[in-house]
Image (cartoon, rainbow, N blue to C red; front, side, top):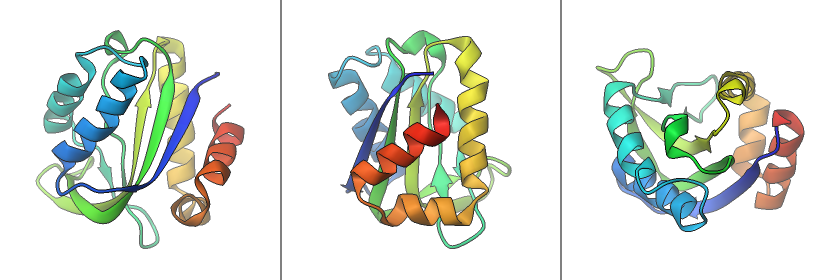
Length: 149
């Protein structure tokens, strides 16, 4: 699957809603998603939290909206300047502190599961997460392009 990958190295946000608005807003500005994307992602995050507690010291989150809110496929990866609290995917009553946010905009239903599976594979590898956390943005983009396509 061909998708644009955008890596933001130092996103400033205080809460998860801010992160979703910043990333979703950028996707909208660049034409990847419809105007409804941010609100749909915020709503989905309440119903189906996306915080993932990983092996190692860095947790991630995967906020996204359904395919009807997407124009063109893209993935934003944001390294947050400070950890932000997200509710846990596997236990919505609990919160975790997240340092990296992956926001996919997936258009084709056939690609949806595949991309999420490939991202999950990355999430299970502490070395991959450290690489994403510490590498230069263009290196992260290259790594993700190789891994996801």
